[in-house]
Length: 226
Image 1 (cartoon, helix red, strand yellow):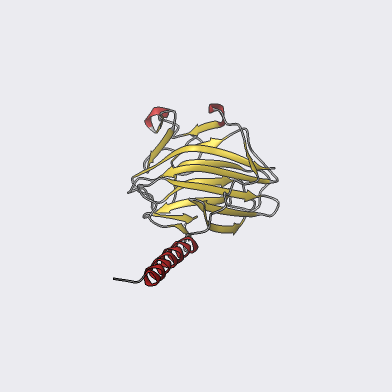
Image 2 (image 1 turned 90 degrees about the vertical axis):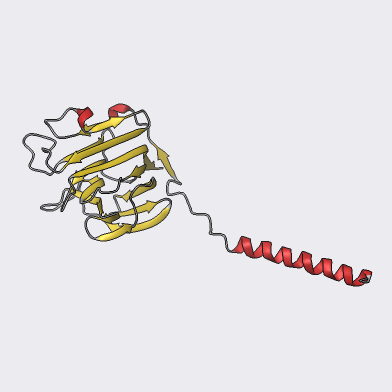
């Protein structure tokens, strides 16, 4: 039979081991990620702020649906451009109106979803740039399950068939843009100039586009730095 002293030592050792394990577990937890919208103010958005651009010969319901929560947009590689006089690639996009900007710090936030098979397409852009042949200061493309900065730098892999939170911060005066996926900083790049900007999201065909391109969006919010 163990002596009272030995029993007390055993209990003390057990408590010490448990306490150390708890401290170790706390120390290995990932630090809390700062919210990209801290210090920003959400702006009011009504339905009038969501301007749909679609193939000019298609009714809105043929390429777009909105159930009050999720906006679904799709386009075919064989579709016409959004305007009869346009020579751009097919698109079904939402252009945020009423909040064009030329200075300060602005932010787009939304939850996006890209079905598998969608490729060669821009799903979000910050419109406005300077210089010949430059219309946007940032584009996020999808190529073969990867989200990229234009058709070059990887932003996020394995993007298909999952909801992801996208934040794009545009510091106009500093001419820099920062992209967050699910709260994690994924991209920090220089802007491309321009005197007026606005946000767009949806599907806009690019290089080597798939036959059908589609993206879904919900909880889209625009923020401005206080």
